[in-house]
Image (cartoon, rainbow, N blue to C red; front, top):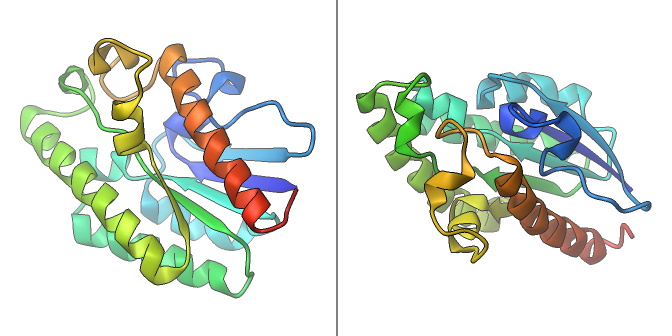
Length: 193
């Protein structure tokens, strides 16, 4: 089974060794190609989709850069729905992640206070949107926004990020457990393993 992964610096492993990014896990039955790109947005990902459909599962992790850059919630949701439309003809499982929440440390280099408050609100709304849209548009959603916060493997959520945006090794490890669980369930449901 082959998984193509598209997304931003979180997928790309910014701040950790690339192979330590959460999308990498050991399973000899799975081949994974990581097309994560620092700074990628939903629009950038949308333009790359037609060339990345040679897989059994397509996984997408975007949204944080969109919202930190001040893009509207509506435009990001439209891009996600366009991505889904582009993938329908291929008839492969599409998994879109609700990205994790950011912390106040992101105002020290990634955004100002106004963008931080706006991005936090939009990330919560995006999580809610993706959970509902996945049911209405026949794609899967992995809700890192809530599942990471609900994990019992840390004391302070803020400690999971080295700059308020990018997960540290511990966070990638927790995210990997969440990702692997869902991906294996989706693969089995679709008889890919």
